Image (cartoon, rainbow, N blue to C red):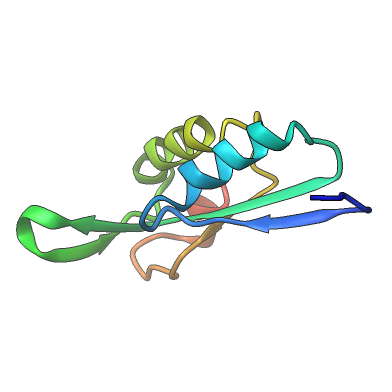
Amino acid sequence: MRWKGLANIKSSFYHDDEEIIGKWLKLEGKRDGIFLATKFGYVKEVRFRSSTFRMSYQGSLPRYTKSLRLLDFGCIVLFYAHTPSPETSIEQAMRF
């Protein structure tokens, strides 16, 4: 791939997106000019066949840590909420 200017890469934690993007970024070896974004908040509870939302700092910190590891990029420029939660204040969700 030929790089020209800024690249905006939007990821999410669904399926294997972050892991695939992380491997691709490592293979390309290009880090400058990348605006990397991913989501947090949605948690699929496979064993209960349901979904929950973890928007608090404590609830989303493990997701942030895992995203950093999978993307293997060093930083996430934009870490944004999948869906707003009435139980979590905007200040709590924006703590990152």
